[in-house]
Amino acid sequence: MLKLRMIALAAGVAACAFAGASLAAEKVNIAYIGGTADVGFYIADAKGYLQQEGVEAKFIVFDSSARMVAPLATGDIDVGSGAINAGTYNAFERGITMRAVADKARNKGDYSYQALVVRKELWDSGAVRSLKDLKGRKVVTTANGANELAVIEEALRKVGLTSADLDMNLLSMPQQVAAYASGALDASILPEPFLSSAIKQGTVASLTPMSKLRDDDVSGVIVYGDAFIKNRPEVARKVMRAYIRGLRDYVDALKDARLAGPGAEEVVDIIARYSTVKDKDVLRSIVPHYVDPDGTVGADSLRKDWNYYKETKLINGDVTVDQIIDDSFVAAALRDLGPYKPKR
Image 1 (cartoon, rainbow, N blue to C red):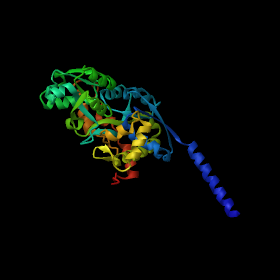
Image 2: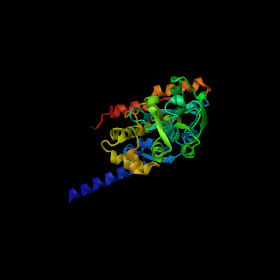
Image 3: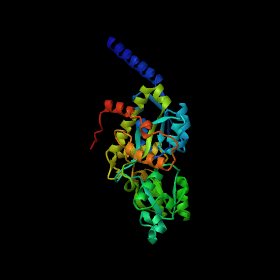
Image 4: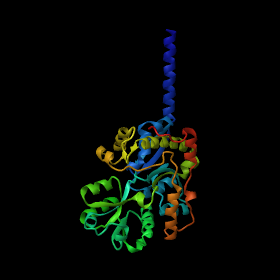
């Protein structure tokens, strides 16, 4: 009887401790776009890595990373997911500061989830088969001062052209898909799943993977607001540990430029549950993005972008890449987790 009472008491203490831990959970607001590249946080939440760190995450969907800037600066959002572009440096110059703290998505080798595509009629007729053939053609990017524009410019210069030789315009991703269908657009950089969908519909052909234009190109990063860093650094470290654990599960699931490695089906299920891409067959068939399983930000790629922004006066101040990056949270996580070791 005494033994039973002791067991009951222990169970009660454990329940109280659990309830206390739950009440004490740190609330963290995480902004994301909803694409497949936010998979690190999807897995961290779905598999309980954030909860194990005592973090209660609230995921808030934004239609663009640009809209995250103001709430990150005010502290209404703690963590953001997006790209470092010219606007990021200009905002920093005005005192609207935030830091790139971890990797999110890259085009690397066979894992090039973005590609430079051309209208299918131009490909089929042989009118466009190389970068040189884009001269005078209508080419679009999603924003001025974005990574894709810097990469296109870098590639064009290698063949003796610049973006001034093209008819450059701005269109959102859905608008691009529609423009190809109507024949109003000649070329652009499309990411998955738009890429595979447009190819399947017969409106575009892939001219070259993004990784052939610039290998190990960084297209997205994880951002911490300065208020989060300064006011809750320990919570920020906890979020990073959970995020990197999620990244590693994702990287383990990569095989032969598909989600086909160990644990792939679980990862596909999680992405379908959290992202805007709900079709699991699509997720199995698209080329997935690459990400550093240790979370290190790809500074070399960001510097190439910065050089282009500076040269073309898209950056109006002196803020550098090194000022934007804060690798201390990744470093702290790696001290606890150790370096990545693949499962296979």
